Image (cartoon, rainbow, N blue to C red; front, side, top):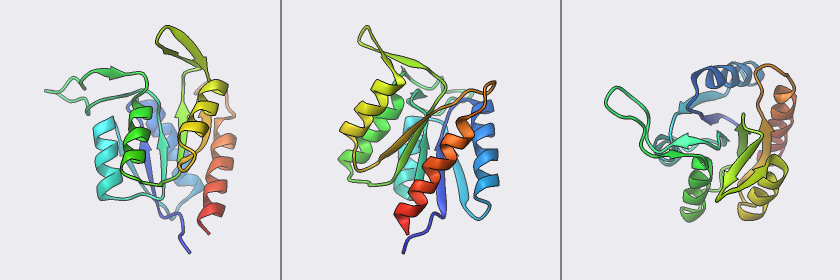
Length: 157
């Protein structure tokens, strides 16, 4: 029986990362939580640390942003790149997407969260477990995230 013991949050925005991390650590006090801020650092931690659950932002830079690193090419769908790499490497780690955007532009066409969730379910059925719309002003994301985490915990038992 596998238990939820390690959770990775892939998020490059400081306030959102802090808010999600505080909520998760309150909900799951015995779970080790780490953060990654780019596609590359997320993939590196998936390989080396092997979390039981990934909370994934959709828009991540290619590399961690730092004093001498601008982050590389901005990726509106950096989260999808992470999911593609996970599929290629056959990493079947449950993923919950947490995004602050209500829609994404894909080759000139807006994709709303319902369409994005359907696409992720179809393209990544082994890993995608849900999509949470994060809004720091309007609540509700915490309840939706709690439900997604509970489902993953039941799955792991």
